[in-house]
Amino acid sequence: MGLSSVVVAVDGGGSKTDAVAVSLDGEVVGRTRGPGSSPHDVGLGASVALIDTLVREVAGGAGVRQASVYLSGLDLPAEIDAYREALTGLPWASGGLDVDNDLFALLRSGTDEPDAVAVVCGTGMNAVGVRADGARVRFLAVGPVSGDWGGGSGLGGEALWHAARDVDGRGPHTLLTDAVASHFGVPVPTLTEQLHLGGRDHSELAGLAPAVFAAADAGDAVAQGLVDRQADEVVAFVRACVTRLDLTAAPVPVVLGGSILRAGHARLDDRIAAGVAKVAPRARIITPSQPPIEGAVLLALTAAGSTPEALTRAGAGPVRERPQERSA
Image 1 (tube, helix red, strand yellow):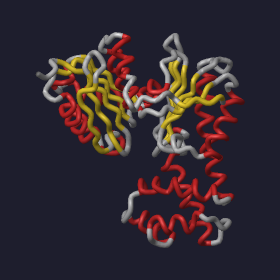
Image 2 (spheres, rainbow, N blue to C red):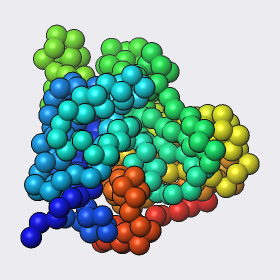
Image 3 (cartoon, rainbow, N blue to C red):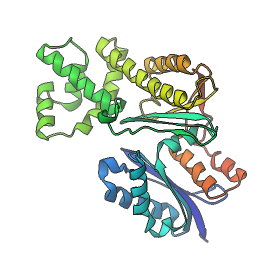
């Protein structure tokens, strides 16, 4: 016999979307993965349609008591409100419904402390800071116009920039030139023309991020400069959060997520740790071993009023290893 009601959690980004259904006592009853669902990338309508499909799939015909949806691209209050309104008419959204940025799923996957910071660095970058009294620090995170740089898109764009200048003589030689040509299978000038004329999408440049780290490991000064800049951007987010929340002297957990921060790049990690230690000496850097969807599940169960035992059960599965902590 199927369950009469379930709690559903969704965590979606630019490349993939995870959805999980659990019973009120924390047992997983459905799990699936779909493509990226960021409304910035696919549009509001397509994003909502995908989320609707995934939620129905994992719910398996049971009523949805609580749905908690956390997506990248929901950065502004107006975007969050518009997305919630778009979901409201769907049958499964008639119970409890939470909609917010995927940073909150990442944050909960690493800590439940009331004073905390989370930074994500994957295709792009964003961060959030929270304090026990309800204060929050958020960022517009809409690209260069809001002061943003970094993630795979930022690193890839800079890699091509330096490669182009190497080829035409304006800049120093860099291993990135051959790496860019190898990755795309065409010379750098040809790639530039393809991007300019619309033959390729600029989003493809995010795929160059591993090449940047490989070149840095090989001693390339240009690539090392990009890795250092990426680390400094992470520290800048942390500094802004703890300063604005008056938490610079607190033992605040700093949760790091996203493909780039989870990859274990020594130069990047060491520089982040050193930088965080300067701006918040008592901070603890946490890189959760479990994916953000597990944090979304815990948030959804909490919103549904589940017991502490249910939360423990939901966090005790094989994908819920202890977070890897290191002192900053």
